Amino acid sequence: MKKIILLTLLLVSNLIHSQRINIDDVIVICSNQQVVGQTPQSTNYTTLRTPCGPFDPLSSSLALFYVEIKSGSTFTFRISPQAAVDYDFASWKNPNFDNLGPGDRGSQNDGMDAGQYDIGLSLTETMLCEVPGASRWMGNTATVPGLVRYYDVQPGDGILIAVNRWSTTDAGFTLSFGGNAVLNCDLIEKTYEQCDINYDEKEIFDLDLIKTEINNIDQSFTIDFFETEDEATNSTSTTTLSSPYTITTEDSPKSIYARFKRANGLYSKTMKINLVINETPKKPKEPLKYALCYEEIRNKEKIATFDLTKFESKLNENNIGAIDFTYFEPFNDTIIKINNPKKYLSSKRNITIRMTIDEKCPVDIPLQLIINDIDVKSTSFTYSEFCATEIETGLVYDLTKTISTLLANKNQDKYDIQFYPSTEDAENETNVIENPANYLVSYYHEQIISAKITDQNTCPTVSEIHLPATPRFRMKDHLNTACEPYKLPELPEGYAYYVEPNKQGDNIKFNTPESFLYGPKTIYIYAKKDYGLPQLNDCSFEDSFTITTEGCIISKGISPNGDGLNDNWDLTPYGVVNLKIFNRYGIEVYKKTGGYKNEWYGQGSGSTLLPSGTYWYYFESIKGVYSGWIELIH
View 1 (tube, rainbow, N blue to C red):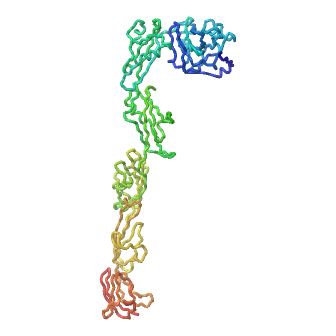
View 2 (view 1 turned 60 degrees about the vertical axis):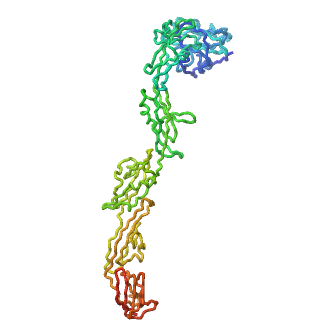
View 3 (view 1 turned 30 degrees about the vertical axis):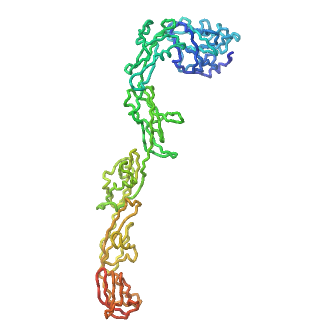
């Protein structure tokens, strides 16, 4: 017993049920002849409903039929089970196959309780629908159980009939038609398409498979294919086409014609079959790879913004039709459409480019995304001014000598290096320095040069080179006529005084006794700055100047009485190397070797004081050899 559902009109109006119908699942009938031996099949349609039972759908065991009215004004049909099988039905006039709501005719009676298993439309009934479980005992069935009101029709109307088997068993049914309507058997069309997947400009169509698809459920028609419509409409034509059937892209679309004959041999109808070969987008010969340099790091991953559409023009080159492109990325064994392929922010991964022509023949192309990072680190350093060449207006640097430092001694052939006067120029690649081996920096300026390094993957890095341009410190020869010691001036940073060339001999520190000098004396200036890059900045500078002292008189006597005046014999201006003093008998009484300044105060070789008197001297100095007498007065 079917479950009886009582619904209020308000509830029915608040619920709208619809379903899309695939026309390939519908059997098109164009003749008023009976259709015998049909059986409902299992389908995916689960929400088809009669107008009186929107909450109790037909089961998914369905047979769908469609007729078109050629002439007449009334239309009926009758479904007659070939055994006591409970069938229901719903029908629609001029249905919307894409949005099929409840039918406008239907019956969901119980064949046993109604005492009548035939269902359909009748010219004498007025009810539009029998509710689920309608029976003669409930008094809710039609005058003739299972039959409801006919359709008023006009030429061009179409009727969809859904025959539903409620019982678990089946024996088939016969579908017959009534009223004065004549069904339209004019030529109908069906199109079959294939993709030229091997690009040989031809495809093979299986006509036997098409024959099975266009036949009815019971395959009761005899179907043959012909080249022309005239042949197909002639019931005696024998020039049939054999399967498989090959056509070329030049022939496409190719029309052939199917002739339908009933089991009794009578001609039924002709169907136009359109065979179409669709162009399949051509795959590129080489795998697609897309490399960019990373823009930033997020969550410890380097990312870049890819314009995935950059390959579209190339992929379009060898295709006739315009390709439609869709982009997908893999995610948990599924694919997700990329909504903004022009600005696809991603880390390393592969994505899929799907190509179609007129939304047909999809071809998926993998695109490998690569994010590169240059293996040269950005750096900043100073190039020593002592490595530059002096000219009148400034220092001339050879920037090419910094390349090994910029590349950390990597192979220069793998990189492109350009020098720019600023970071902004390097970023915009403007005002490139055309002759980096001869770059002038004016005196008293410090120029910061930007070196842009690009690897073979076009990944750049920018380093800074500081170029100081301070004039080198020099001193002119000095003549001192006042017999005063010359005080060496303080040197700039990185400079030092030496008494011998090539940084040899004593280093004279500023403001020490050694820095007060009498001439003649040659002093060497040596300069070298430590900028932390000894391999690049192993450059130095050296210059010299001479101090000459004139107007100094050798004192003729000393009076070592402790009054601070003339207590010692001061020979500092002469740069004495060896000194000897003799008494009047020619006997050596004092000797000093290895440099003398003012150590003698009248003492003898044994440190005892010599008596007052006249003594003779002999000394060797940087100015020459001197001899004479000196008076010692106590």
